Image 1: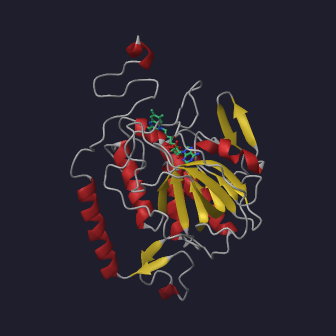
Image 2: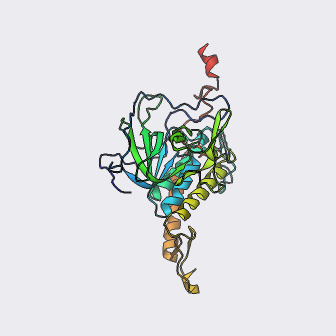
Image 3: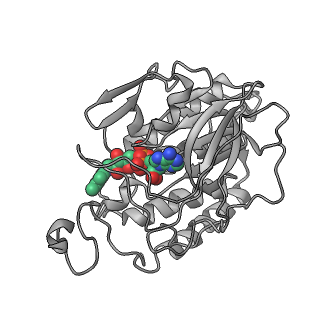
Length: 325
Ligand SMILES: Cc1cc2nc3c(=O)[nH]c(=O)nc-3n(C[C@H](O)[C@H](O)[C@H](O)COP(=O)(O)OP(=O)(O)OC[C@H]3O[C@@H](n4cnc5c(N)ncnc54)[C@H](O)[C@@H]3O)c2cc1C
């Protein structure tokens, strides 16, 4: 990243409860896609080449499973990456996640999201809270995102990442991955091919995540992939790999292998791969065991979420309209 302003808030590694009470994204026809009212007016001025903005090599809109997984891939390929997320990923509505790899008895979906966020942060991803309300290009070919910070429904914290600012801000990305199910409105100024399907809008891609706008990619549910967690995560990874191949970064595979795996066969370690010693392997294993013990020491502290048309407090699942009568 270049031009980072010291005044701009840094994201921090979250504790294990990191979601806000912001409205989750809709998943049924008739749900509103409208962003929560923030009362903030960004009034962005046109971007110019001279404008000093935080500039990332990859800017990802949406911190659900697809955006987070994409970010892990781009960051591990040494591309400076930021994820901007508003509200809760839709997976937070799930009651127990039973069909993702590696969890034979299932996993609390909020825990799963915590793990993904931690994985992103650990791999060097910057995560920021905020709703991208517009995306355009400056005369240097950078994508410029206008970001509104969001107040949560309790009117308390503005974000879940330590960001306590309130003013809208702008941020630049050389490439963008849109992973913002179910919001595509901020893409309209770029002339992206978007399909309207009832109350939904899907972004067209070339099958590998590229849109008709060079440098703009789409991942996850927004690209109309199947509505499943692993598929969204896998698609994020696949689209990120397309982006890496399109960039100047030399890349073969993102693999960690035992010492000598390539070099003992007279090969250089390919770009993106890493050979580690047995000592290092044991250290990493111990670290991962300690981390997992901590992650799974207690039940997740957050309450179950449900569809926004229902009351999702611990007392019941009463439709809002009945509750208000
Ligand atoms: C009730 C329910 C239960 C489910 N159960 C399962 C299950 O058991 N197994 C399974 O495999 N799948 C399940 N799914 C499906 C799975 O959760 C989704 O397919 C998957 O999480 C989609 O991920 P995504 O990253 O594409 O979208 P999302 O998780 O929606 O991520 C998009 C993110 O972008 C944010 N965002 C949107 N607009 C903007 C913007 N303008 N600026 C910044 N951020 C923005 C959103 O708030 C969200 O955090 C379930 C879904 C639901 C609704």
